[in-house]
Length: 296
Ligand SMILES: C[S@@+](CC[C@H](N)C(=O)[O-])C[C@H]1O[C@@H](n2cnc3c(N)ncnc32)[C@H](O)[C@@H]1O
Image (cartoon, rainbow, N blue to C red; front, side, top):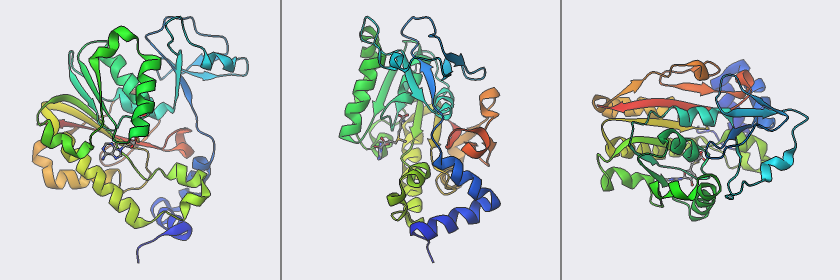
C-alpha cells in the first residue's frame, strides 16, 4: 500500500536510508548552514569576522566578531554585498559549464541565488533567460537581480514566466546551457514544519518525479547539440533524483550522455548512480542532488 502522512514518511525514508535515517532526520531538522557568497560586481574589502571557505571560492562563514548589520548594507549604487546560500546551492550553479557568449536558461529560477552565480560565470557576456512560473516568486527574482547586478549589465538578462515544460516546444535547439533546479518534495522543509508532514505521500513524490522528468525532457529538447544541462533538486527521495535520470536514460539515452562531476567541491558529497548527493548528516549542509548531462 502507498505510504502517506507522518507514519508513511518515517517508513518510506527508514526503509531507504536504513540505520542512517535517525541521524539524517536530526541533521535535516537542524538550522541551515549558510555561507555568505560575495557579490563579485561590488568591490570591497572583506569585513572583519568572516572566514573564507578554503574549498569554495568567494564564500565565507561568520565568526562571533562579524557585524550582522553589514548584511543589510548597500553600496553607493544600491547593490548588496553578500547573498546567503547553502554551499551545495553554490556547487550546483557552478556545475554548469557555460561557453563564452553562451545563451543560457535558468528554467526554475526564483528566488535567484543560482541565477546570480550563472550570470557571474558568464562574466557579462552572452544572454541569460531566467524563468519562474509563479508570479510572486518571479517578483522576488526580479528584486534579487536588481539588488545584486549592476544596471549596465542587466540588459543581458531576460526574466520569463512560462511553464518550464513549454521550452522544448517553444525554443527547441536554442540554448547552450540549462539549469533545471527543479521543484521537489523538499523534505527538509517538511521536517522543519511539522504540519507539512501530514501532507506527505509516496504518491506526491512520484508525481513530482513525473514533473521533474517532464522538465528535463523539455530542457533536453531546448538544448543545442553539444549543449549542457545541470539537473538538481533539494529532495532526498530516490524517485526525484536518480529515479528521474534512470527514466531519462531508458527513454532518451541515445540523445545524451552523463558528464563527470570532478573537483574538490564534490568531495563532501556522496556519489549516486548518476550524480552527487550532499546530505547534512555527513557534510553539514544540503540536502542537494546534482547531475550533469550533455546533449549529443
Ligand atoms: C527549487 S526552486 C528554485 C530555486 C532557485 N533555482 C534558486 O536557486 O533560488 C524551484 C522553482 O521552480 C518553480 N516551478 C514550479 N513548477 C515549475 C514549472 N512547471 N516550470 C518552471 N518553474 C516551475 C517553483 O515556483 C520554484 O520557484
